[in-house]
Image (cartoon, rainbow, N blue to C red; front, side, top):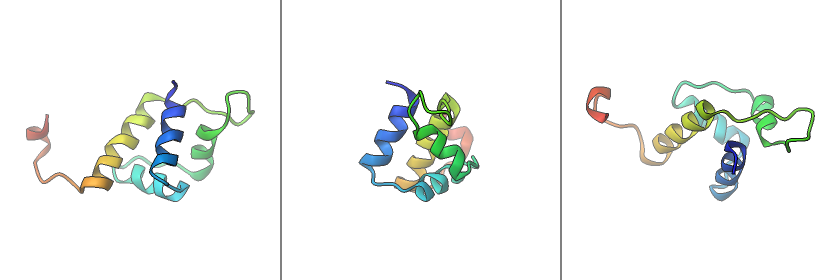
Length: 80
């Protein structure tokens, strides 16, 4: 399963719209446009397909944690 598949399945399972995904990414200071995001949802043989890298998925998952739980109150040094 690719990162693109994971991102698509999470989006569907959590009933997120494109705007929701973009705002979740912004929670961790990662900016992405709608067209960039839509390129991640395309099939591999589509001309606009873009591979979802580890950095994008990692930032989405970190933003999703903040979105679902709220921001951490601990300083960054104590979290690790």
